[in-house]
Length: 283
Image (cartoon, rainbow, N blue to C red):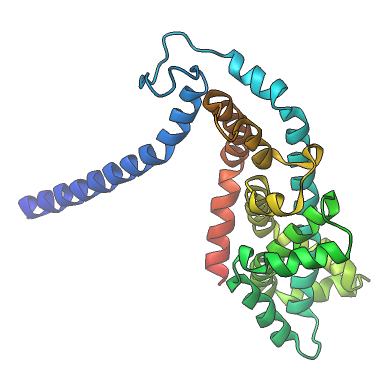
């Protein structure tokens, strides 16, 4: 009996070791490109391809200052912060209202509208660029901040409504009935009851939207031509010319653009896990 139990323990330990080994290898494969990017930012144009060391003998920290000043990254950084903030606020406000209405307010065609909204998730973003550009031209929104923010809000609404509606559908109606007894109207029930209970889903949606907007590039290429309006990802192209690319400065700029997202993810990872787990349980 003891021998059989020992074999089961050893077998379980071996599987656990194998799983952890695979996860460690996957983690290394994900982190290594970031490390290589940071190390490359500390090299020169001459040594970036000849020196394969992960620890440069003479690191050039001034590349980050040059990327910030020469590439005008201060403007790009502010633009990305502004676009991200406006888009996240717009997505959270509109999607939460739409999801609550779809979940709690009976009206004709509610299910059809919800399915049509979900169907837009199957359309790839570049597939709508022609129609989007024609619309922006007619509205005189090309090369404007509003013309860049509105399409991004629209692009994230389907995911937001789907995610939040899942939470609102499972909320106990007794809580809303109690709020109405206390004198709350529908908008007050939404604000004081539904939103606080949906905080895990709201946190997940805010983080996903932040990642999508901060890393967006194609729409910025389509809509924006003024350098003073460009976000970080579009601004990185200033280091790439027709005949030469300033790779150390490009890597320094990429490192600057990655740091905020990495910090946000590290700080908010607990909310991401709890929100996804809660959504899975509610579904």
